[in-house]
Length: 188
Image (tube, rainbow, N blue to C red; front, side, top):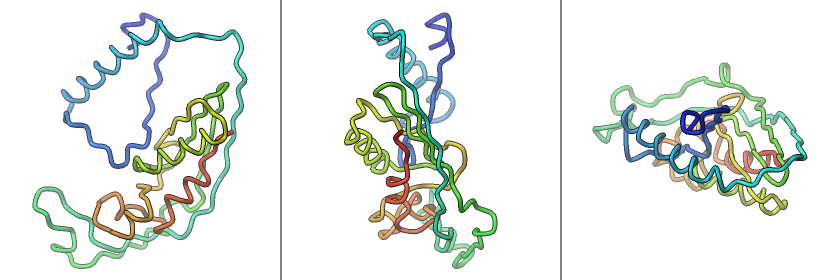
């Protein structure tokens, strides 16, 4: 996109990508997706109305999370088995090396909000954060995932309780992690 525009700096962020897998893989797939995004964004660029002035606000808050735990069997790709099929039950004392006090930030640019989340939220969590922003009156709310820290995946309570998906098994702060993130995600 920077090449197409000929000037400026383009910023790309992750969103609620925890359960998103592109259909085109590898570097060739990433390049194809990037080219498609650049073409579409370049086409839309000329339709954007700019303003001379814009109100800006930001916030950053730290949330004390429940003790992180990892017990269970992570599925392995390819053979349908889990790590427990090879090693037995796994219980890692991750509470000593994973963050317990996590940063959540927000940036308001006029009627647009960017909510930062220190991990990989699944789509449903991202949509809930966007709905929260809409309820607060923002025209658009964007989730910026993998920001400022990494708490692992952020799955819904139902996903964690079902315990069948990798993202749910790697949601390290318990079954209420998703709701905690939705409640904490800042919208200034």
